[in-house]
Image (cartoon, rainbow, N blue to C red):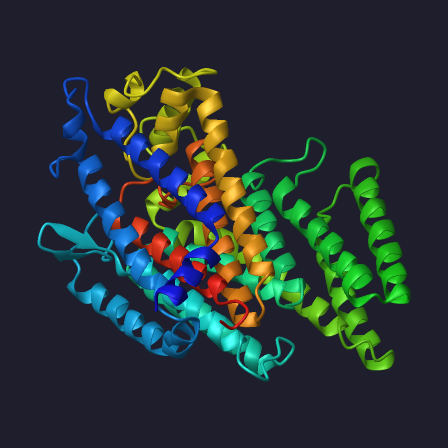
Length: 487
């Protein structure tokens, strides 16, 4: 027995453990800086259960103890129990909708005595484990539509339940798992669709009210139609690889678009959007004809993409004004520069930028952040914890934290690639994707280049459920990695 345990200890990747320890320690120090006031000077006050730093320290201890238990569970046990864990966690998340208290409009927290648990944080582990087990089974084929749709269902089901809890930020994390599907053979067209949807939304909404200087036409709609042409023609060239179809579409679209713009500006003023929609209609018809005559079956997906892109863009205005909550709409408008709301939706980000900028190159020092101590930034020890690092540790400290995070994520990718089976590799990539999404979105929203959607910074933001959930993901993968050669 001692021999076996000794083998497990030696087979654990200690590099990732060290990086985990560094992130956890720096995160706890950041919470100390964000949650304590000037009058609290005793070292032992940091561990008081009346303080957030003390509660976080307790959760860190619980998480590490849970990690030791997880390291004792064999790899095949995780695979075999994945379905049960997934269903059980789903049921708890559904139950949470009905029994959880309303906290700022969200029904996602279950109170247990003086503690509160957020089941959605553990749903990430259940989803990652189930997705890995399903994709790792014998006979799985990403090219099989049935298998692919089952993967999508595994990802989307918990996402929809968490949206029902009114936790949109937590739900969006599951979109990162599509990067795993791409790694395992999913066609890149789905990623292109996601990226283009974001581009269409941003360009269309931001420039919807801006008019061309020499045309009575909004820039947004026109720019989006041109982008749809560019994306779809690029798909024909690089994805479908149909040379003749590409040349015809490129020649017709480029010549007609340029000619119609020149005529409208210099000869006869008219609504050139009519020409743009006629061109998109021509593209769809030509693609379908080439599919029929030239047996270019992949053209169907490009035609569907064009139709979907047009429908998506024309629904953006409706979604902005009739679907999104008022605070969500304002946040998007502030992010896109359509509105200045420094006393409202833009307040957090504005104060966060001030705090980070005031830190300068080397920072004000631990517990010396004036913006932090005077509580100018709401949620400064949770979603906006990075502004505390920027103020107290400055550019050097912030850069160091970012470097450790990048090394941590790159190490996860390296461990995922060295797995001996699909189950281990997929689970490793789910971790890397989830951590990257949290890291990129949280830092982005703190510095004002991403919308504020309530995404915590792993191991830094205050929250026991968050810290424990991330730790469960990590230690489970460490055990899977230790058993990668079947031991």
